[in-house]
Length: 325
Image 1 (cartoon, rainbow, N blue to C red):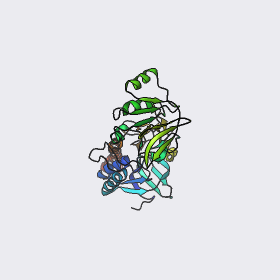
Image 2 (image 1 turned 120 degrees about the horizontal axis):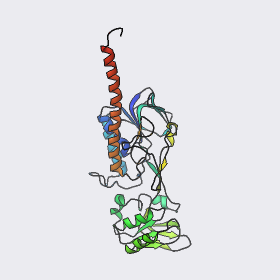
Image 3 (image 1 turned 120 degrees about the vertical axis):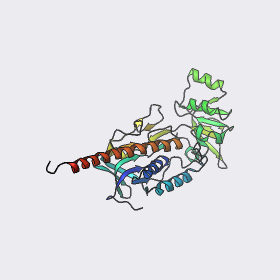
Image 4 (image 1 turned 90 degrees about the horizontal axis):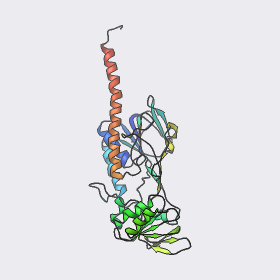
């Protein structure tokens, strides 16, 4: 669908992932005019399948988004391919977003659903295996690597917890301290009690053979055999385009990265702007992101309805007022 600056949408949604499309579907069903801008860079694109999504378990990320886009469009949502580079405006005059191809869109309300980017440790070959046999979430991928030799690559204070958690899926767990993790005495006892091997030294590279992960090479040391490697990346909220609105990322209390702070309904500090999905919730899986966005869409619809109701009541009163009053 062709969009232009003259069209005033009820809601602009930036981000065409599970959160953005879920909100678009809900708003479309509420008979709202919606434009979704999709940059085509979903965070989970490297993964073979989406897990923990009731009735869609194992579906590929691309297929899930294709189905979701079709559903949103069936309710009138316009999906625009492009990357948002700037945003401006406010609640009184509406919001404007500019795309990298020069397209500009206008809307009465704005929903940010841009998600996160993952910063991986500087280990040779790691990025190429990301989402395949280099993983981060046991609930997303633990079942697929059950009973394998699983390594945990130390990258922060959460790495010990990851090692203890993945022990549920395999009895062969190795924690690579990677010069980044120093377990406390209590944590060392827990690791020993669970039979988790702890290896000192920095990880230098991952070894791949016949397109399968085979091991982790330590700097100046041996290679440790693993079939899957768990990493806790630092996550960064995608908010660069919204600096003009005053939106900025905050450091997450867990130390795991940055996020956009919102209230319980997804409201941001900027009136008329909401956020949903991973950009505001680092721990949310795909299903949780979609569910949160659906509720935020309800809140946005009700916000619009309250504005429209106030205008209608005002017009009604003026129509009843005596002439000349």
